[in-house]
Image (tube, rainbow, N blue to C red; front, side):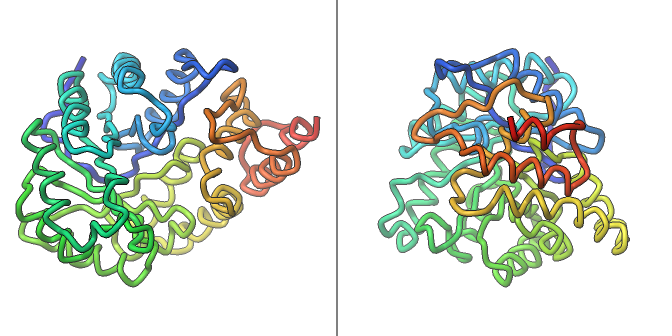
Length: 321
């Protein structure tokens, strides 16, 4: 397996889904196929596993290791893989980081610990300790997952600057601040630092608006369905071809409006259903507490695919069955 040394997180990075059997076990063959469908699209710079999109919250440590090992075996010689680090405790996060490094991942996406929701924003030393504990366990580059401040899990602007200064392996943020003004401040400030920090937008519901602010890439679960359109949009924005970007965005909008409608937690559930409608997955099983979508919503997803001009013929008919 090839190791991508000196990997820089930028460009278009899909976050892949996890295929699950009816008994909630991992469908490894389908997961591998899905990974290839996303990761090997021309223009994709890397792929993410063990993130939100792959229901990492419902996966054990052993399952996360199995997912990463299978992913590396499937595409590890062809594209860098980013492994999510989802843990409430810093030492468990460091254990996941070491596992990912030993397996051959190229980068880490570090989620904020849920344990910080009750005031962690007021204690920047907590964030510093968390990331330093992870950085002590591995030299892999780190992407900081920035949540909305209203969630209680977002890192304040000054805390992010301290993290960048004191943890040199941090190379990027996955920006989900959900505040256009703050997102533009992140983009303008962090990418202009003496040691630049790439901003990877995950504002997928308003992706074009976000990209024109200057983000150096995107990391998105929607890439599990439309990585080709995301590549096309990113390249058009980079080329400053507004007309082309608008035309591509006109195709993306129907799907993102469907994916990110309330309740927001169903976004990846909806993406799985779209893959079934497209014939890319056989079934859309999710692990509880996530639940199967109602038929009416699946029909709406089929209509969104048709409006976007993608998918196999008969998707609407299939959804109606």
